[in-house]
Each structure stands twice: as structure tokens, then as C-alpha cells.
Image (cartoon, rainbow, N blue to C red; front, side, top):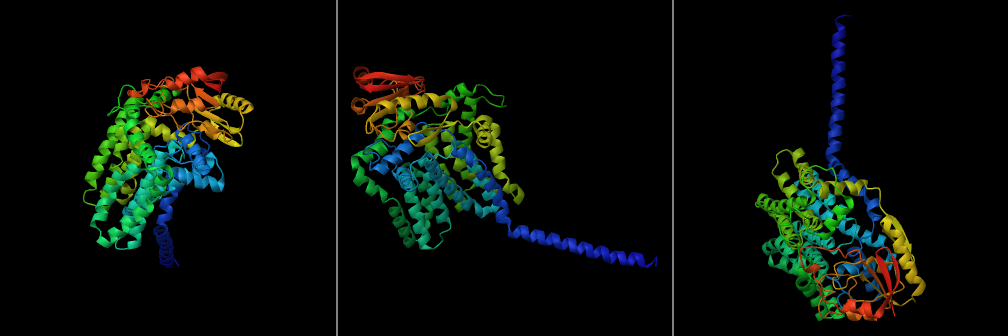
Length: 541
């Protein structure tokens, strides 16, 4: 009996080990088969977690306000550039008008459109990066999301243009000899240009070599698609007029606006050049985050973005597909050079840093480390700019003070809690005196300096007409000598003017008084009717 004990135990132990090994094999097989799902779950979690808060963020006063009122005006039959000021292609307002016609005019609908743009962009980045593994793709798309999520879900035309431009590249990289894919890539590129014509440099750098190396028949297909995607410009030229389109899309933003919006390159490391960066410093006050001061963080981010662009091109030089994505990303650099602010750095970095993460991953031997390349890039950005990258991302996920919803005339928008009473009071006072159909102008108290405005107030006043072609205020445009602002103001029934932006100061021409006629019209033809906080309601008397 004693001799039989060990004999029985050995086979028993052997059978247990085989069973356990089988379980491990099945687990490994399951992980392998479900690797796409398992690697995308973190991205899905990262993406979905802040969406509720992003939909409730306070409304952006001018940029988002312009989209809201612009989309609604298009729905009413007005034309961008022809009937009201718009600096980009017509696709962003056309898209919003279509969404508003189906779901109603609201900031929620506008932000869902912006969410759609971001989904398309992340899908395109994921698809391009997927050639180097699902982990690399998840990291690249996740990094892009962390950089743009702090903007909220505003339906920016730039985000839309990037979304369709990168999608065009993603489709072209997989097109091979399939003509319909080249056609689709061309359509997507044309749509991107319909949002932002200035994306042409990035598209030429990224897609140009691919199209050039394709056969003649495939080139024709791409060009056909490009024409189909951009055919909206023909419609736009016919409805708004060639002169208005050229002036509104090229002369205004490229020639007249530059002097009042351009900031020094490189940005100052001592004092923030951008007005809103300095205002944010004033409102938030000092913080205990380690590292560089806030202006120095902007400077460091600027140089890191430029160096990342150069490094990415060098690392990708022997990989045709990665080089195409890197070149497209580098083609967005003019946005950075025009106005190197934290927002513009991220507008460019949303492609450059994921491209760098992919390039680094490609050169790492160990697959586990390659999947973490994007994490390493993001950690470096947080170290360099703990406020503009680290705290911005943290607040996106954990901010609790989301403002207060202001509802007026069946329209709702979230505003800062300390501003809600003054805003509601002045809107109610206007509504108590004005007649539906009256014209209302919203602008700054000093009309000789049209640097910014609370354009989103138009959205809360659907019963009234915007009184001016200039629904947004930009230096060198609304206040330019010989412009139409003074005549527009003179014909207005009501004015809502604010002194919130009287302290605007940037190292450019925005601090210079230009056309003084609009201020003279206010002085001679309008009477102050009521004041609430920084805003005054004027009546044409």
C-alpha cells in the first residue's frame, strides 16, 4: 500500500496540470480572438466617460454662438458670406442647418454634430494606426481625444475638416487598385475642403504623393471624387455671389484679419500673448502645480510641437503609409504659426502627437511597449505643460461646476452661474419692450475695437433679427475703415453692448481704434434703456 501511494498521486497531479494548462490555452486563445475588443474597451471608456459633462459645459460666447445663429440663419434662407459674416467654407453651417431642420435648433443638437465630427476623426486615426497593432491604434486615438476633449463638443469647422481629411487619407491608404475607394477618398477630401479651404496644404502633402504614385485611371477616380465632394462651392458661389465668397473666405480672414489676430512667434515665455490666456490666469489665480509658469508652458508646448513634427517625419521617412499621415499632420502647422495659443497648439497637436506616438511604437521591439508609446507621449506633455494639458484633461473628466442652464424664449444654454441673473434680466427687459421682428445688434461697448462679442445671445432671441452683417466681432473686419458696421448699427432697433472685452490687450493691431463712426452713431441715435452687470440695453431713439 505504501508503495502504491506515490504511484497514484503522480498521475493525479499530472492530470490536474494538463487541465489547468488547457484552461490557460483556452484563455490565451480567447484573448487572441477578442484582442480587438479588449484593446478598444479602454478607448471606449475614455471617450464615453466625460460626454455627459461635455454636453452641459457653458456655451462658448462667440465661436459657438456663431455656429448656433449661423446654422439657424441658413435654415431661414440666409447665405454665409452673402448675408452675414463667416470666415470659413459653408459646410459647417449647412450641416448644422440640416441637423436643425430635423431635430430643432438647440445647442445640444449643435454639440451632437460636433460629437459626430470627433467620432469620425478618432475612427480615421484609429484606422491608420491599426496597421501597427490594435494597442497602437487605441493609444493614438486616445491621445488625440485627450487633447481635444477639453474644447468640449463645439462643432468647429476645423475639427470637421480634420475629420474628413484624415478619413480621406485612411481610405486612400487601403485603396490599393480598387477604384471605388479612390473615388471615396476624393469625395472625403473634397468635403474636408468644403469645411476649410485652408486644409489644402495638409491634404496636398498627405494625399499628393499617394495619388501621384497611383495609376492614371485611379487618379481620375480620385479627382472625380474630389470634384464631387467640393461641388458645394459651385452652389455657394451661385447663392452668395463670387465677390462675397472671395471676400468672405479669403480677403477677410487672410488679409484683413491677420494684423488683429496674429501673435508673436515664438510666444513669449514671460507673459501670455493671448488675451484669454491672461484672463484665465486672472480668474483662476495661481495654482500649486509643479513645473514651468503658465506663459512658459505655452512656449514649451509650441517648441515641442514643432520638434515633434520634425521628429515624426524623420522616424517615418522609410514607411510610406506613416509618412503620408505625418506629412498631413505637419501640413496643419500654419494654424500654429498664425496664432500660437494653447488652443491652436492642440488643434495642430491632435494629429502631430498621435503621429509621433505611432512612429515611436513602430521603432520599439516589444509589442507591449509599443502599445504604451501614446501614454509616454501624453505623460511628457503633462510634464511640460501641467496646466494646459494635465489640468485641462483632469477638469474634462472631473469638473463639477458646469454652470447653470439659462432658458429664455424656449431656448436653453448653459452659462456661468455668476452671470445668469444679469443675462436673464437684460433679455427679459428687451423682450418686454421690443416687438417680434425688431432688429437687435450684439457687440462690445467700444465699437472702434471689435475684438470679441457675445454672439450666443442671438441664439436666445429667435423672435428678433440680427441687425448687422457682422454677427461676430473681429478686429480689422467689423471695425475697418469704410466698412458697413456704422450703417448696420444705425438701422438697428436695439443694441446689447458689453464692456467685458474693453480690457482686450494683445501684441497686435487689435488694440488700435479703427472706424469711429459706429460709436458716433450709438452716441447720437441711441438711448441707454437698462443696464445689468457689464451689459447695457440701448433703444433707437
